[in-house]
Length: 452
Image (cartoon, rainbow, N blue to C red; front, side, top):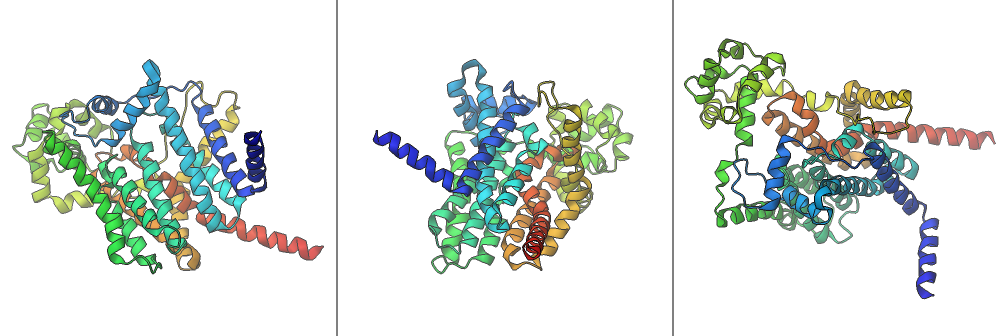
């Protein structure tokens, strides 16, 4: 009887608390739409998936790709309850993470915008992003990385806007821990704690947290986790120098940029020459086009990874390489997205509505998103309240986009590599839109009141 009374009391309390009720509604709505986008619960497997699955069975497997451990552990957890259909659990867990982190974002947006319904609208726009829904069933680490990076972002802004009043050491320790875990999901976040730390340092107003506590709890803990993993690898006899992903990416990016001339005599150079593609390779200009893809597909995995060629680029063509890669920095912010497109996706949805849904997001990615980001930057100088949010968000986006663009082998891979920061990217881009709606809504309300 007491249990029933307490349950009724909790339900009544939730009903009275409109913000809490709305947050639960957001969570459930995102979960339902996620399930609607993939009702079969099927997961998508990629060439990279097999490496992660192999490591999930033996985390210290001396694999030539030398992947970090967190996503294999995530797959191991997913496989405990699933039996033969354990990949369905991957989709469900990633969907749960997606809905959970956006529910947490709702409270942040509610504070920033000052309107719970606008905050809910922002969460739903981000939550229904076709790109995120497309990657949810994928047995790849991007969605898990998105969860941890976004969590660091939200906690950092909570610490800043609360002025460190609530559990400052716990919050900062959590930021350092989650950031370190993110780096052990994918190495692209290896230095990701730096923009977060700079933002915390600039906007820290807590008298209980000095510089030393700040750097130890965030940067120190971040790198301690990374060093702990490297030490564990060393103890278990794993040769960490065998990591080849970065080498392959630099080699292929250099090839795409027409820098093959600097590799004369290397294995990659001789392979391309023997296949009759040398003249074609020298004419490549950085575009991810059919001519580059023809050479790329002709090379096997061993030929694409040439440490000597990578060293030649690093020693003799570093500036050329950076210029060639940076020419396409804008692609990170303007490339359109993949979207769920199977016969079972959004079953029953009219074709016209499906088309409107996909095209509206496509046109937001290009050309609106870069323009909206510039408007957000302008808001930094207009609204003091948003300074910490804009600085922190743009710092993370600039860091992440630079690392991806500099070390990616092709522009087409940007659509996948961008996924981990898409929640931050959307929130930052849509801030001017939310401010405009809020301002006009209040003006309309004032006119209505005066008219009465």
